[in-house]
Image 1 (tube, rainbow, N blue to C red):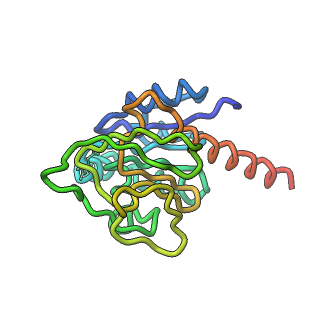
Image 2: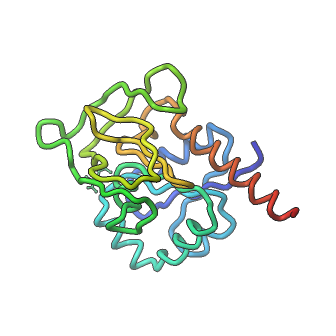
Length: 196
Ligand code: GLN
């Protein structure tokens, strides 16, 4: 893999674990707090945490135009848990889904489950859910990669990959590997366009 520069939005939430997984996969992670940190990124992770807080911090850091420019340039984005909510139709609008917050209810605030995930191979993926959302509504372009009890919990739409669980909290890097494959493909496409 070329040296892919992957930003991890580091305003709030568990960004450090993402950086570790990305490094393990050979990428070069960079914590993003300001507009200058977005410069030259090949991809961006919006981590879990608290979606309302992350939204407010994006506003106060004036990062929304940079996030939009990144998305419009077709550079991949991975949104996990609160990051999925931040990307949904009612927030940044990067994916045509409506997330339901804290969807699993009081009894199931936090749990682990083995998921089948399209693109992650045959072995089930152990997934950690923490006050997780699920995808309540989705548009026609949204591909569901995994569901739990009938509710989509991992989706992809174009350059955006999102999941309701925390792939950074296990030792299994396969979900991030899907994201890195999207990033490599996006770079190759950009390179081909530049050569044309
Ligand atoms: N419940 C949080 C929210 O609604 C998300 C939780 C998480 O990211 N682990 O923003």
